[in-house]
Length: 105
Image (cartoon, rainbow, N blue to C red; front, side, top):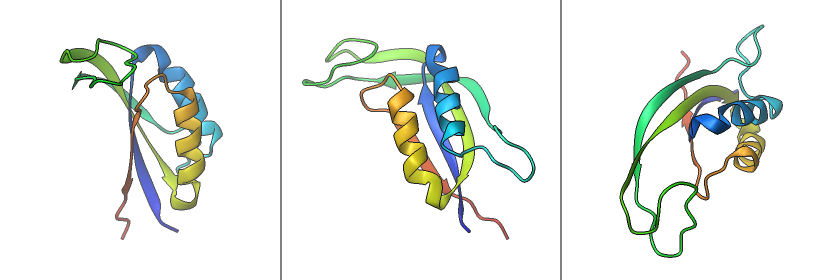
């Protein structure tokens, strides 16, 4: 069964909500362990374009700010449920959520 690495950029204020949603959807299982994830602070940049409703910043201005990167894993068949759960808990209009295939020989 293919496994995926999940990468999510989220403001620090919403890390716990995103982690809870991620794990409630079944992500973070590694063998006999549950809720496996890592979180660290990163610097992000973004520029809201006309029509955007930014969580942080203003349309047209390049923004620089601190975010957190959340990483975990899930089975490929869980990806849709994980994506929907994380989007529901995430404050960004366009949440950055990546699913990357893992090579497991």
